[in-house]
Length: 454
Image (cartoon, rainbow, N blue to C red):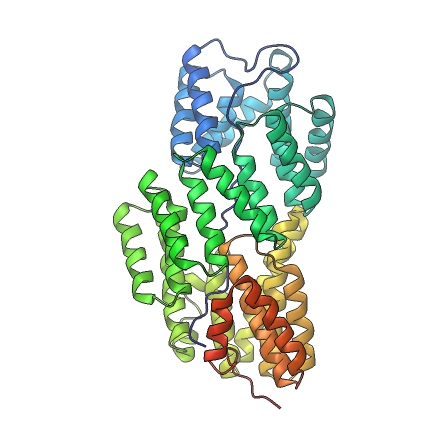
């Protein structure tokens, strides 16, 4: 196996709050007596929709400082402060939760009560609050966007798509909806539609980084690496600290076999000032991708206790380490990794985040399929790899590559079972998405996983 790029580098679909201020059926838009606070809050939600999160945090801070009694701004400021001063952030949240909500707008009441329900671990109440407010104000774009995003997170893509389309109809300037519609189309393998959505997004907001980044992700998925790099470079040109695009450039280089270029992108991100959390994830990816490219299985296994592998938010090193352990017959390590993933999966199930649950279920099924295949249980491996394929989607570039490589492993398993016709039928399906990955598989002698044909 020349390259092991088949897992999410970053979760790239980020939820934003909204952009323009539009009136509800009655009453003021937001409850503040400070024009400066209102101006800063509006700037914050505009930045959030662009996915410019650091700028949004700065505007939220200024809005709160201009009016400490502006409850929604105070709540958002507590979330910003929680990164550096958790105790003070909790105090501010409690002050908001204890405030008299009869003096704020229905929308503000909803945001506060919704946040309180989640803070108190009452997700069912939060869902009921969302349904109730949405029933009363179905054309409030802030709530329509929240409802669409919540529906998407629960895996109801058809309803989420309908809601995002409705948002575009009633508020065409909520351009982030084009982004979400593009990703929903990607998840379902409707790549031509996804490209149209992303290009519409780029046409409407050419001066924002995210449209170019999203289009770059699609191009990586389809094996159009030169176009991907061009689009991602444009995103960075527009916003040099748009860290998603540095990650995606590293992925694009790795997918195209340019590991030196991948390393250059990591160093470039570091020089640009990428935050430590982001940089660590990208560096971990590059380290394990490079070792997997050399098939340095023992070297990978020697790092099984590294922070990269133990970080539950960075699955790629765990999957590569599990593969290395399986290749070397270290079943104790494979079991430890599978148990760790299963623990995290249970927490996801409890949270009700269906989209994240599906991805991690796919990850665990993939791991079990790899282990069973290399233990000689080809029928069991086939079952698990098929289950992984059902759970994985083309949601973003990283997860798309995971799905494609899982399909390569499944094809190899079928070939080892002597099911050549079915294996090549599956390869034909993959080729229709990304011909480059199939060409790589063919060049390897149909041997990514290391199985012997019957």
